[in-house]
Length: 110
Image (cartoon, rainbow, N blue to C red; front, side):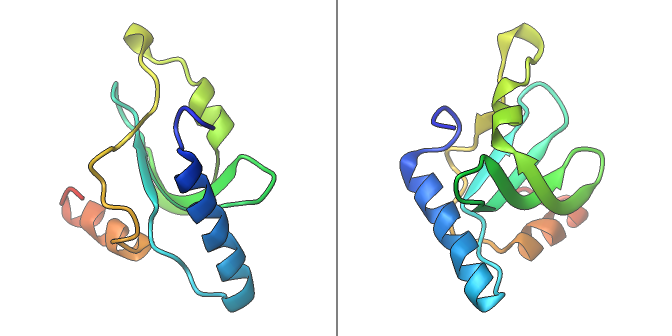
C-alpha cells in the first residue's frame, strides 16, 4: 500500500474505521485515487485494520459507496506503463463522501 498511501494516510483511514465502528458516524475523505489513463476515481474514508480493503466512494461507470482492494488498485496495469495515482492536491479530511457524490453528480471537480 505504500506506493498509493502514506503511513499517515493509513493511520487516518484506520482511525476513521475504528471511529465509525464505535460511533456509526462516517468520516471525511482522507485520500483521492484516480486512473490517469481513463475512468476510475476512488474517494477513500476508511481502511479495515490488517487488510488492504478500503471503504469510500468508487466512481468508474457509476458512483457508488463500497469497498475496494487497495492491493488490487496497486496491481492494475494501465496503458503506457501508468498506474493508479494519488491526487496530491486533494485536501484530506475536508470533504465528506456525500459532498464528493454531489460534486460528481453536478460535474464539479474536487
